[in-house]
Length: 584
Image (cartoon, rainbow, N blue to C red; front, side, top):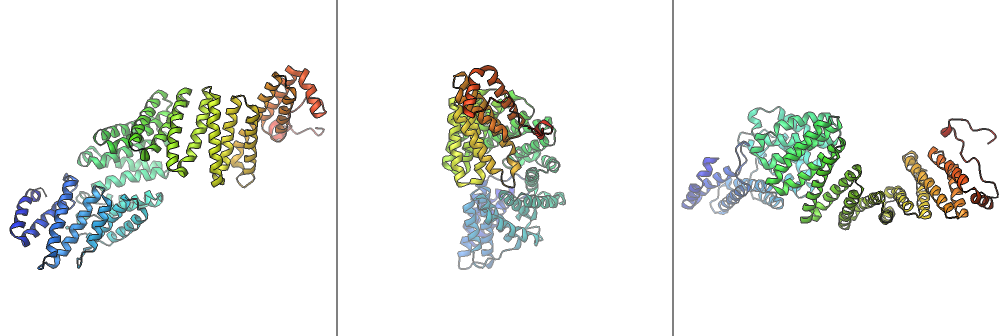
């Protein structure tokens, strides 16, 4: 190909001197330059290949339009349009690639060899995938696979692709449609075919092999087949070696970043935490190199790699290193979001969410609040653009922010965030009751804690009572056990709040109000077997008698007509392990 490229000026001169034979010579030379070749020969830049493809198309269109055109000129025009579409796909100009393929199909009288027809289907599938027309891409990719299964390629057609490449594209589309099991099956067939190839055959499909192995590793990891993913991942790592990085850095280096990140996850799950951390650090190093050369591609991958490294550091409880990594990921995603908020705001929100968790685990309450406030601000923006996708997340981070503010001794701020979380969750429940009604109970518990911290015990009791009521309603169906832990948490929160309210009212000299709280606490104890609730009730009544007997005992008698109870514990075999006495 290098000699043909060197002789292009002579071919152009021949086309000017002899329009018929000269143009055919020039067209053949241009197609030779544009067609895919042995992968280890560094290809010319895409923009140059595109210029050659456009020139070849113009040459053959002129030949096909002359009065003395040969029958093969239409064939070559269709071929040049297909190769033009190939260069457009390489440059991610997918709409134009589809137009070129449509033009190729419309060439009158053109004969399409089976390999060229299969390549056209393959390119159409890739272009439709690039345009996010996934259903159309799946149909085209399926047709492409079927066409290549029937094809026995000649030496001349070997560069026009084959079944492994078609299977890889088909698997890629299936993965994008979240049909992961089918995708993995297609990848496995692709990889099996590649393993059976000779070295000479592999020379034309090396990049397909690298891509298929890396993407199969990701699919196996997504399916939870971690040991298989590690086995395939080691093969992928060997295939994506430094030689391939030098041959096709723009393709192989991003694959290596994702591969190392997936392997780190698999090593983590299988228990090899030191190796997981090392592999995640390799992903970060690879992403830094890529970002230095191609910021647009590399920086989002660097954020992903930093997030994966942060996960490993979290598992190893290395809080200082994790905090550094999480901050870098948040700062980098913030820079990306400042340029393209519609694309990168969701990524920034996730990074800030993880930073909140990191500050919380490290005991840095104020840092958790600051990161949480940033996360809420970002989620507000994303929820404005896509309410259905991001409003539930906004409600969650508001609830988390409430908890962080409460721990940072800002109860008023905690109440404000929790109230907004409850209001938003109630509104979401109106449109999707099954998904958000039980979540309303959780948000109410968060608001109840904040109100108790702010000293508003009456409002807190109302929140916990409503939370209990919602969970009892949800527990009537076949999934009653699903909400048992949440119901227990609501009842314990209610018991703690009623106890606190009784103590405050007695301290303020409001014995009648204190008795109302104690009676509610006793009623709660009678309707649950929870040992922690019973213990809270026992201690609350004992403390009231011991410290405020002169006021609480008469108030209880006035309210109930009975003496202050000396025994409030509810006998339960589940709690005490004893049989209830017959006289009780």
